[in-house]
Image (tube, rainbow, N blue to C red; front, side, top):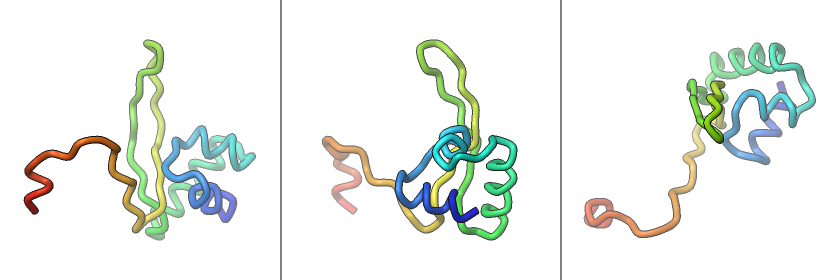
Length: 83
């Protein structure tokens, strides 16, 4: 499980298949570890569906708990600037 945590610390939010390839684990073992880490509250997970070149890709997206992804670059809405 430490391989997964280190991979997420280094690379940020990723799909389960990307984590498995990067950490050198099988996809089934990675999903088992991800469910254990989510139960402990160390990571956040959610189901994701993406379309890449017309191909549907489904998986579990994961990130470390307590870390908010960076905001997208570009102009911000006036409503968010007023707060």
